[in-house]
Each structure stands twice: as C-alpha cells, then as structure tokens.
Amino acid sequence: MDIFEMAMQLIAGAGDSRSYSMEAISHAREGNFTEARECIEKAKEGMVRTHEVQTELIRGEMLGTKTEITLLMVHAQDHLTAAMLMRDMAEEFIHLYETMKEGAV
Image 1 (tube, helix red, strand yellow):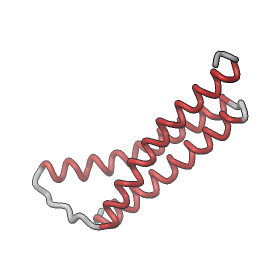
Image 2 (cartoon, helix red, strand yellow):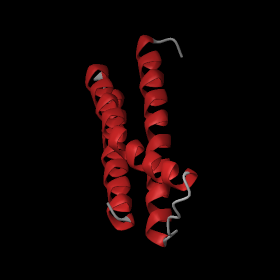
Image 3 (cartoon, rainbow, N blue to C red):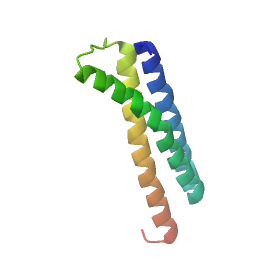
C-alpha cells in the first residue's frame, strides 16, 4: 500500500468514526442511550483498521523505512486525532445526558 492509500484510509476511517460519535451525541441528547452506546461501539470498531494503518506507518519508521511527510498525511493524522477526541467527548456527553435525565445534576 502506498502513502496515498494509507492517508486515504486514515481519513476515511477517522471520518466514519467521527460521524458515529456525533450520532451518539444526538441520540444521547434525545435520551436514546442504547442507540448512543451502539454508535460509540461502531466508532470504536471503525478505528481498529485506522489504528492498524497508523501502527504500520510507525512500525515502518522504527525499522528504518522513511515515510514521505506530505500535507495529505498531516491532514490524515489530524483527522485521526480529531476522531479520537470526538469519541472521548461523545462518551462524556452520553454520561452527562444520562446523569441529567436521572436528575442528579
């Protein structure tokens, strides 16, 4: 797989994960916590292959294979970071909305 394909896989996987995380927040806002958790699981599952691609890049660099740093790869890594942050925040939002619904806030 070339660097372009790897970057595109990172962007696509991260984008899917971020979308599921946003969907999870919407479900939680509506009080649909089962659906929210299902979306979080889909977000996590979607990141598995994305992390594999990133790990492949890191492993290659550790073994001495130089990877060209392109704007596309920087963009892909940015998407990955944003998706991971969004998933973490979505989990916090679910917890917050559940707590609010229970009247504990």
